[in-house]
Amino acid sequence: MLLNFIVITVGLATLLWSADRFVEGSATIARSMGMPPILIGMTIVSIGTSAPEILVSLMASITGSGDLAVGNAFGSNIANIGLVLGITLLISPFTVGRTTATKDLPLLLLTIITCGFLLRDGVLSLLDSLVLTVGLVIFFARLSAHLKHPDINDQQPDIPQLPLAKAWWLFLIGTTLLIASSRALVWSASNIAAAFGVSELVIGLTIVAIGTSLPELAASVVSARRGHADIAIGAVVGSNMFNLVVVLAIPGFFGNLTISTAALGRDLGTVLISTLLLTLFVFLGWNRTSHRGHLGRSAGIAFLALYALYTGWLFAQPNLGS
Image (cartoon, rainbow, N blue to C red; front, side, top):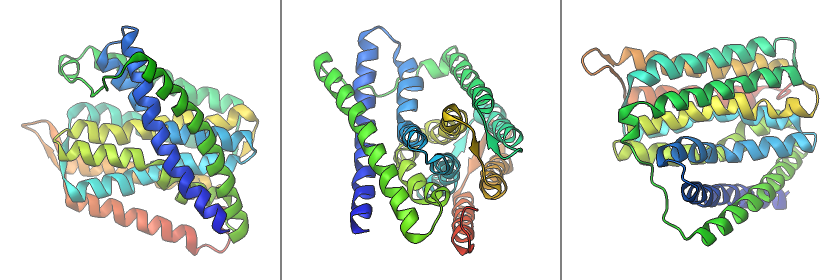
């Protein structure tokens, strides 16, 4: 059992480190091929922060641990708002822009409702996954719209200056370690679930979800403290959207997956409630002059309280994940 906890700890650390190396290498390679810096930031870098969730979901699906993949998708969304935004707001309150409030958050809510509609029969099928990936097309269409905005184009992402040969090495090392560490993480998480009689769904919702949400936590805290509020909220909203249209969709491409009533009612329901709560706080703090919504420490406390209640609900049930 000790070995499993060591593997899951080392696996998470390696997963996060390799995701950074993947982003550094691929961003430099993309720039050498003439890709605009802002496009690199909105595609490679943003996808890179979701790489842990994607790889864990892929490996879980390949090894037949579909519940772990679903738990990772839903759990990461809950952790991103409950923990990531909660902790970030306690450290540094910030404001949310009009685009996020009036376009991105409603689109995220629509995606959550669509997920609920597709999964209402208790099965994640190939057709469901294909429909979800349509959301990925919408996601990139939104990126294209952002690229045409003059304010966005003035914001250049921090892309490392690296020799091309070193960038390729970082890309290859990052990719290899992402695959290996995600496989080790799935193996150890499955063993821990079996040893404690806890479902893989719950392990995915808690240990794995918190671990794979660490990049968003780091990005949000640093961005908020530096005054880049749009990047902080964008990291959370963008990651949550990506989790639903990509991470959740992955198991469906490997065969029909039965979704438990707990995953639908309790977990997806909490994803919806936390997103609605975020939207509510944004509009409660709306300033008609600046056209921005203020998120203060009270919102952070509310998000953390919701996450604590949800986690307590998980482990208070006699048959977790059923």
